Length: 93
Image (cartoon, rainbow, N blue to C red; front, side, top):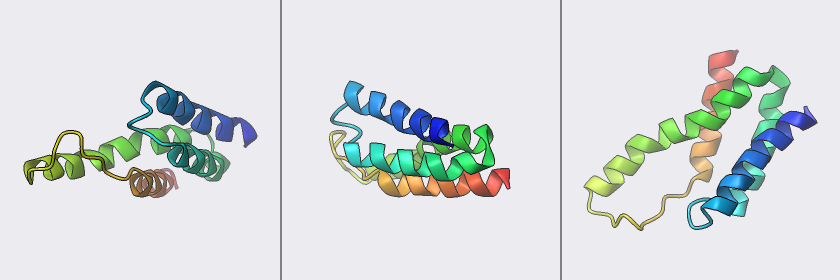
């Protein structure tokens, strides 16, 4: 399980270092915790848990932009990380 925590947390840490204005360190810590929780179910929930937050945030981001928000405006990503983890767990049983 610790390998899975490191994979999820490490991936988001790399994203935070590459795009510091897009992903914060709070998201990195949350991703590591969710990776540990999803790691109990194997690799499938981890992979889905990393991908699904972006799938879930997409319609919200589009709606946010259509309502006239600036392209530099930021959406909090933490709730989408949790939603993606919940969906990953539901989809993988």
